[in-house]
Length: 422
Image 1 (cartoon, rainbow, N blue to C red):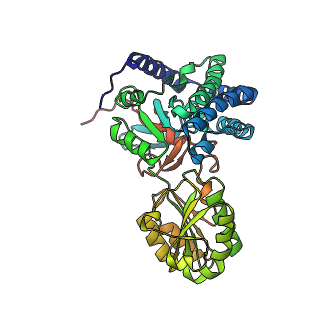
Image 2 (tube, helix red, strand yellow):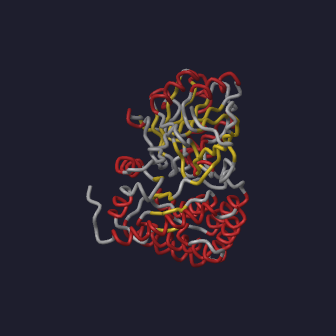
Image 3 (tube, helix red, strand yellow):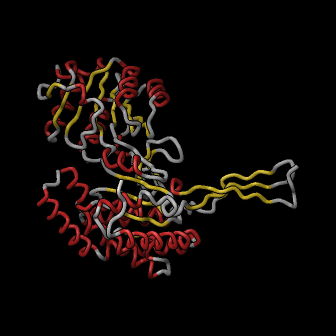
């Protein structure tokens, strides 16, 4: 892989600034970080007109280049989305500081006193596509956790990301912190990412947020740890003892509220004993919502508007108004299907049977398992993290929606009175 190009020197300077900023962020007091965050939240609202104009330029470019509907939705900023971003930043400000917490403390027989204390990670590179909200979420979380954020958004959101990062830069300067604590890369050259992924001495962690191809490319190329989930193939299983009204509301929300995100339902599983009662009504409402249904033969009996599902539809992340539907024989069959086709992201069961719910929760291997709730709740903000840096389906270091704790590591502090090892 070639990593040499004309922008290498600029990127080295960017990395040097990020490293220095990470040291300053790690040493910053909780009060100082919170003041900077509250100021950034106010700046998002105060600069709403400027931010929307920058986003409008990106949207016009996206239209000219034929960006698909799902990506355009993720790219779009609205006054309401900006207000939600500001709320998220203020929520992060109010959260406990994750840095410097004593995670454990104990004493050895030889008198040594040990403590396990949380520390920042350092420089965190976030690579993402058409999601300007990521600029704000990751900037806020990295700052609060004492890290420096290096943000490489997609070309389609270039103007939006620069404008949002500038809000943080002004706030950081105002409060005496390096503006490089939150940096948006000033290039869309893909070779810049190739170069950065080789800099394991300068970047301690990479978090790619986007489609499966992006995440796999980053995971293959990076010389430093990568937090990842390749795709979100989320299921909702309607058990034979489900409340049908609740099941319908959950299924419609999980699929239609925002179809282009990773925690949207991609496959609906329905117990055979309730398929006749459940599928006609929910199917009609899904079709009315513009959703294409791809169903197995048992489900199609009750879904006259559905297409025949192909084998590849199960396990597919559509990120669109397309839904695979399958009838299964009970909770164990649902668990087996999820075990074969799930991606470890989020799975949900709708049931009034506590034993079935317990069996589902215990046996489904996913970073989030829901009982009588929409998969759309698998989100850092909804979990009370203020925002999320990403979602991990790995099992080492962090899993599920990552908030502040996922952006810290730890060190051991050993205090003695002159002990030597014999």
